[in-house]
Length: 389
Image 1: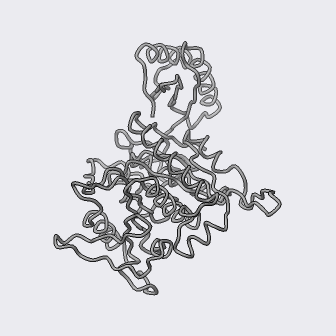
Image 2: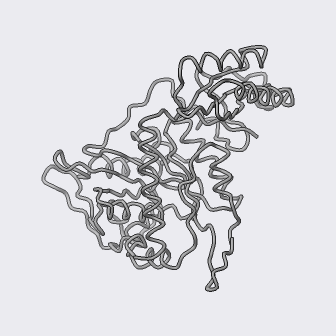
C-alpha cells in the first residue's frame, strides 16, 4: 500500500539509523505517495520501555525528514513461550510471531507461512474475488455480502455470490430462492442460480433445509472448491466482474484454506462495535495478513439505532470499528445502522439494497468505496500489518 521514493527513502533510512543508534532495530520502512512513513521496528521483549522510547524517537526522526507528512511505527518481536523455552527452535526465515491480542495457534502460523509456495487455484472467467469475513459469527457478514453484491449488480457489474458457510448457509433465504436447484451444464459445470441480477451458489441449494451438515474439514473444502472451480460463473465472452465469497466465521480450516488457496484480490472484515467482537476481528485480520491477502477495509454493522424522534442509540457500543481501522491503518468502509429495511429484506428474500431507502444508499456507498479501495490495492502493494499488546 506504500511506494517509496529513492532520495526520500535514503534520507529516511539515514535518519532512522541515527535515531536508533543501531540499524538492526529497523526491520523495514516504507513511504506512501503522499509522504506517509510506515516504520517496522524490532522490539526487545525483555525491555519494553526501551522499545517504546525507540519507537517515539523513530517517529520524531521520520517527521524531521523533508517531505515526510506523517509517520507511524509498529513493533514486532519473537520470543519463546514459557512452556518450551529450552526446546524452542528459531522460526523459519521470513516468519514473524503475532503477539497477544491477535494470536493464532502455532499450527495456523506455520500454515500461513508454508515452506513452499502454495498453488493458487484460478477461478475461470472471474476478474476479481473478494472475501467478506469475520472471525466471529452473528455480526452481519452475510447481510453485508448479499447487499453489497446486489448493490454492485445494480451499478452495472456482473456479480457472483458464493455462500461458503457450509454449516449455516443463509444466502438462499436472503435472496428468496430457497428452492433453487442448480443444474449441470453439458460440459459438467454447475450453473449458478440467478436472483436479483446476480449469480449465486450455496450448499443450501444442494441439501435439504433441515438436514444437519455433519461434515469434516476435507468434505467441506471439497464442496467449496467444486462450487468455486466447477461452476459457470462466467464465460470467455462475458467474464464475471466480481465474485464475492461469504466466508464461514472463525479462522478454521475452511476459512484458512480459502485464504491460502484462492487468489483473493482482497478481504473485507465485518464487525460490530462491542469489544467482544473486536477481539475476534483481530484474529481475522491476523489470518489474512499471515496468508498475504490484502485487506480492503473494515465494515462496522449495528452501529446505532435511530428512534422515531431522530435520536441515535449505540446499542452495541460506539466507535469500535473506527478504532480498529485506525489501529491497523485500514480504511473504515462503512458504519451501517440497525434498520428495519435490512432485517426485513433478509427475511423476505428481497435485499435492502434494492429498496429506495437509506439502507440502499448505505450499501451503494459501501460498494463504491470497496471498488475504490480495490483499485488502490492494484496500484500500491499492501502494507505489512503487525500486532502488539
